[in-house]
Each structure stands twice: as C-alpha cells, then as structure tokens.
Length: 81
Image (cartoon, rainbow, N blue to C red):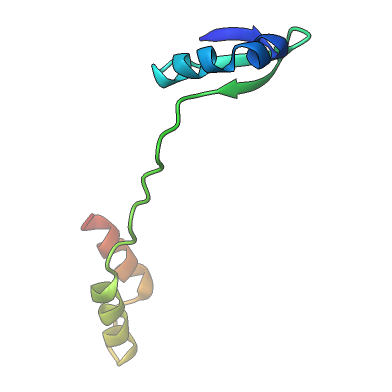
C-alpha cells in the first residue's frame, strides 16, 4: 500500500495507475488525512437466482389440500442445499 498526497497524484497519476494495475493500493491523503483509495478494478460476479420452480410446485400442492406446512417445506428445501 502506498500513501501519497493529492499533489503527488496530480503530478504522477500514470505512475500510480501502473502501481494499481500491478495490484497495489494507493491511499490519497489531503493534509495527512486519508481521503480516497485507488484499488485494482475487478468485475463483480453476479450469481444467478436458483431455479425455484420445484419449490413453487410443492407449495401449489400444499395449497391444494396436503397437510404440509409452509414452514416444513422451507426447512426441507434448506436441508437439501
């Protein structure tokens, strides 16, 4: 981790961006107080939603007259994960 002043960043931005590209973090200080951090960019991984069609079908059967409670269905579903 590298700590630099705002002035240093203005004068040498390319240099600090290269450090960040190589995995370093750059802390920017204004009058010795940290005000910003430059970190390497990474894509956020978006997890897809699970397929809940089987769960929904079990709920429909329950509503149709089965004696399974919704609490039991949820517990069984969680146990299967």
